[in-house]
Length: 168
Ligand SMILES: [Fe+2]
Image 1 (cartoon, protein in one colour):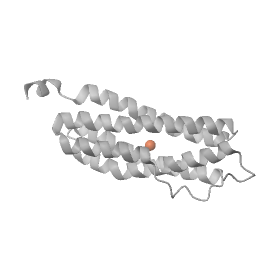
Image 2 (cartoon, protein in one colour):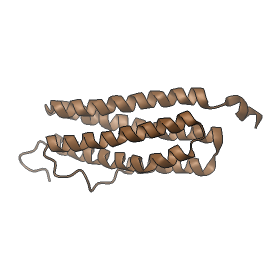
Image 3 (cartoon, protein in one colour):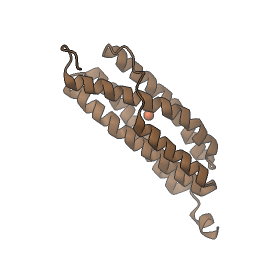
Image 4 (cartoon, protein in one colour):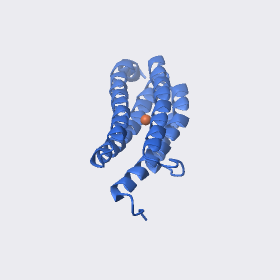
């Protein structure tokens, strides 16, 4: 039950932040394996860069928790991220080399789009609640996720060797 001092929308925002905190931590666990499985060195580097960025995003969520006096963001499991990461694992089991890279990019972009939706919603709710600093921090992560998504699209277009695939 929402406590009397808190707006129910704020309760919802806290739940969304916990979900994101779980998602980011699951992604931190998944990215090294995706980097290891990537064939193309640029794709591997992009996953490694995003791993570092994701660590910063977790710190940003902790900063938001401080700002909002949330005792902890732990204790919730993001099932959305769990399912998307699971799909990435299926790709790794089924494909190799260039097609694997194409599949890994697709799996990573599904995760990015999930995060973009979740951060966008949280940012909007923070704004509606007048939590300007929180909204600004969420926007920073949202911008990073957007850049990562664009970078992955570029990689999909540039690194996957379509001729080699046709010869196979
Ligand atoms: Fe993220």
